[in-house]
Every structure is written in C-alpha cells, then in structure tokens.
Amino acid sequence: MRATPFHTSQHLDDDALESPGDACPACDASHPRRHIAWLQREPDVALLRCDDCGASSASRMPTGAALEAYYARYYVAARDPGPAGDTDPSDGGTASVTFDEPVRFARMLADATPWIHRGALRVLDFGGGDGTLAAAVASELLARGRAAAVDVTIADPTPARPSYDARIVVSSVPSLDDVVGHFDLVIASAILEHIPALGAAARALFARVDPGGAFYARTPYWAPFAALLPHVDLTFPGHVHDLGPEFWNAVTSTFGIPADVAASRPSIVETSLRRAPVRTAAATVLKAPGRLEAALRPGAWRRPLWPWVGGWEVVLRFHGAPERPA
Ligand SMILES: [Zn+2]
Image (cartoon, rainbow, N blue to C red):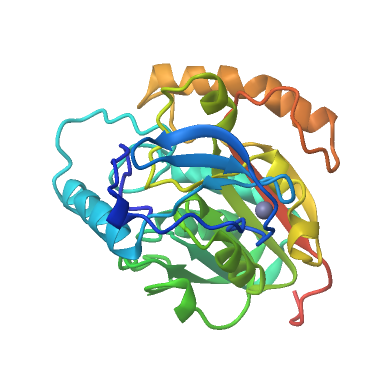
C-alpha cells in the first residue's frame, strides 16, 4: 500500500459509508467520543476522539468497496505519475516509497532499537510496499553488526523487490492475515491510519512481535490542526484515523501488551531538503519544539504542550528475551 500516494480526499455518498458505530474502532469502548473536525458534510463524517484510548477516527468508515475504488484510482496514478511535485501532506508524495531517503529512515530505526541484536533477524513490514524501506533497515543492521542475516516479510499487495544482498531474504504476502511466525522487528510505517478496523490490525501486529522484539509505527497527527483550521484536508477516506501521543503513550495499557514505550515523539521528517526543500524545512521547524518536549518529558503523558507536529512515531520494546540465541 505504501507504493501508492494517497494525496486527496474524496467525497463519499451514503452507500459508500458504513453506518455510524458507537464503539471506538481502536479500543472498542462505547462511550460518546468528542467531535474534533468534519471530514466531510452531507453525508456527515466527523473525526471523533476517544477519551479512553486517545485515537481519533472517522465517525463512519468507508465500505470495503469504496476503499477498493479509492485505492484503484491511485494504483493507476502510481503507474502514470503525472506532473511532478505532488504534495500529499502525510505520505511523502513519492510514487515508490513514502520516504525520500530510505537510508535515513533505516538509521533512525536502528538508533531507536539498540537492544535488537540477533544472528538471524526477522523483520515484518506491514504495508511495506515493494520492501525498499525494510531492505534498507536490514542493510543498516547488517552494516552495524547487529545481524548476520535478515529475513524480511512484507505484508502488502504490491510484490516485493528481490534483494541483491545474499544476506537479506525478502518475501511478501498480500495481507496481514497471511503472515505466519514471529518477528524481532515489526514495522507499521504510515499504514495504520488507512485501516478501518484499527484495533484488530494493531492486535494482530502486536501478536507477531517476539519477546524482546521491537514494534515501530508512524502515523499522521493532524487532529490539532484540524480542530483549529476547518479546511485542513485529512485525506478521508485514505486516512480514517489520526494517532498522536494521546494514543501511543497509552497503547501498552490500552491493548494490555507486555511492552514499554522506548520512544514516542514527533515522527521523522519524511522528505529530504534536496527533493522538497520548503516542505522539509517547514516540517523540521514545526517538529523541533515537539521533539524537545518528547525528550524532556519521558513518560506516559497524554496531552502534548506542542501538538503542531503533523505526525507521530513510537517504538515499543517487548518484554522478555528472544527464544533464539543472539
Ligand atoms: Zn478508543
């Protein structure tokens, strides 16, 4: 899915929308949720915040058929990239990967998971497109001597590219349901916001992390902007959730998972100065106070003092020791 840029919202008719549910799609709590912003009007779809788990989600989800039609548009767009310089607010705006420089992402993730050190490392990348990002992570961990061989599984309908490094084996399965086994590192970068059944997907991912393993997620965090500026485009139905520290700093208790939050902070800037100088500079400046806050306020706080960061990332460290020797 990451192979396709989702850059615009699309107005959905009533028959393309599920009926509004009472329960939060992340944690299943059925308390009334708070109105944050409108995602569309007539028929109305609101972004609602769950005060239990901190997730903000669409009040009505797109039907499976509506999502299929929406993504089909972008598969066509991805094959025919059209004019250069698209400006998707959250997915990076490139036709191949969401990151301008996968190596920069790989360094960040290697830095954020210093305890990951295995002879044979297993990586799962959910929504990992053609596997470019996960292969870069594998290369970085090999280069740092933190793995001798890496087995990468990509859960994505896009076929994975084969690896040219004999120490990295890349395979792909079409969906999360097809994944078998457990992993030392599970990546869900810029994907959970697209999944209506967020809670089920999160549980399925957490269950795939081996004891002692790591989970990484990156999600849009535009709700603070949307609450103030009614015309901010949250790219519904491409994005059906908005997840910041209110959600991620409580995720271990929300889902009852045996893990600690190893990092929770404004997400890495996904564009590069070289390819998108203005956007990269603006994102870097906006994220700076948030990064400082995350560094100075470790712990399970839910309300950021500086919410104007646009995206959030989390690293979870699962308890226990790996069953296999390092
Ligand atoms: Zn909830």
